Structures are given as C-alpha cells and as structure tokens.
Length: 162
Image (tube, rainbow, N blue to C red):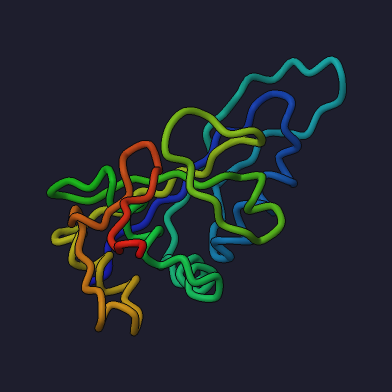
C-alpha cells in the first residue's frame, strides 16, 4: 500500500510565495497548499510561514530520479530517517526550481528546503521497491546495507580498485 505523503516548505519573509510554489510543483505537480502568504514589497512585514499539503504520490519525483540514474542514492537519502511508521527527507528548493532533485542531508540549503514526509508501514520495503532498477540484479541493495552512504553523504566503496 502506498504511504500517505505530505510535502511542506517554509516560506520566509523575503521569499516570493509564487516562486516557492512553482519550485515545489516542479517536483510535485499535484501539490496544492491551502493558502499562501501574500507577496509583499520592501519593507516586508509578514513573518515566515510553513505551507503544507498532502499529495497522491511521489511518482514525479521517482521519474526524475530514474531519468538521472540516482536511485541508489535516493534510496539511501530517503531512508536515512526511516522509522516504524514512515520517513522524512529533504530536498533543495533551489534545485527544484529548475526541475532537478538534490537531497539535503542536514542543516539548511540556500534557497530553502522541501520536506517530504511519508507515513505508512513497511516504508523501507516500499522505498526499496520504488527505487528498484536492473543493476540490483548484480548488486542487491536494501535499506541500511553495507553499500549505503554514510549519514554525512559520503559514498561507501563496495568495489575494489585493482
């Protein structure tokens, strides 16, 4: 069963709400947050605000990951904070603005973050299935295996250089 998906982002006082929405929608086209903050000019008096909405699936994200052949990296990044009831991962909003996917492992990113929360049982198995590719026939992968990237994003070397 597909997990419940919630996509959120913080619109800061200096952000253009329409551009933020466009950025998120470039990765998640069915994202429709309730109400966006009003666009304002200098001096800005509004505060930062989190906008959030549920979406039907992460299929458009997975399509981008497949096209860019980064499914193993995606599996590692999306599963890093996996727990019994789901997972959360972060994407760069600046990369999303041009239709690209860049995972943010910790801290903040220039241009803001998109938080993606997946809720459901057996989320690790679901992620493995969604990121499967033919290369895993030769090098099987699973969440948390010896081939996973480190928590700081460094790659684990799984082949020997001769």
